[in-house]
Length: 95
Image (cartoon, rainbow, N blue to C red; front, top):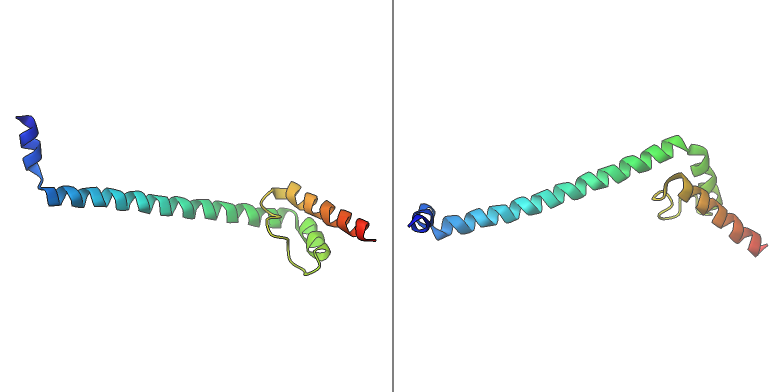
């Protein structure tokens, strides 16, 4: 009997609309989560650029085109140092 009462509380249209709003809420949460993660990554990259300008400048000068290699900031200070060593090793083997 209680199931019949609950079933009669909202129509099937109201139920599907409510279900769709949950789906939209989940999508919206996912979008916001992605944006927050992207802002976190950008904040980390800017902090790295601010804290180690000499390493960044050295890497940019070694890269040839004056730009940082793709992904060099993703591993932090160690990633920049590793990229510098890699470029130096390539230049030494070319000579």
